[in-house]
Length: 229
Image 1 (cartoon, rainbow, N blue to C red):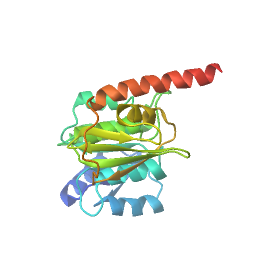
Image 2 (cartoon, helix red, strand yellow):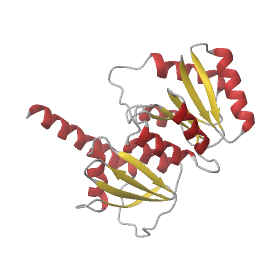
Image 3 (cartoon, rainbow, N blue to C red):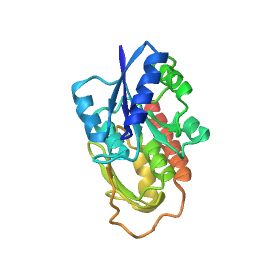
């Protein structure tokens, strides 16, 4: 039986989600955690097939949990509960990886259906893993100030946000917009999240949405060239 992990510091909401899902759906089991750290402890000891997490929690927040999932369990779907997640954002996120958004307050009647579709109605073209574009979109939507470190086996770069605005970026050879575009083209990335932003200079003027589109276009071109060679 598949297992869903619900992570929220509100005990009443955890209990309510768990009760509703158990009542409506017999095809998966529900496990809960009160913060990101407890969630990690659960994940280390239990095979979890889907994570549904709040973003703002004590001890270890949802952004840090998502970064942890990206590094250690990149193929596990993650849903972030957000008051700023519109239907439009949810639909766009389907193209960016397994990080999705659920609007708060959560419509409990729809929750079981969303989870069931995740497990049983996925299309062949579905992209697994918490991708860099989806994580950037989440940071911008939640208006976070932070630093994202992006790593591959051979490369590393940093992206800086101030209140959800993409302000600067750097890789070994690139800076500003070109650094962001380069990182989006990388495969098999690990994303690390830091609440601090030590870079206060704003070098980037283009919005996240624009860079994500251009970066994904470049990535497709690179992949097509590899296939043709």
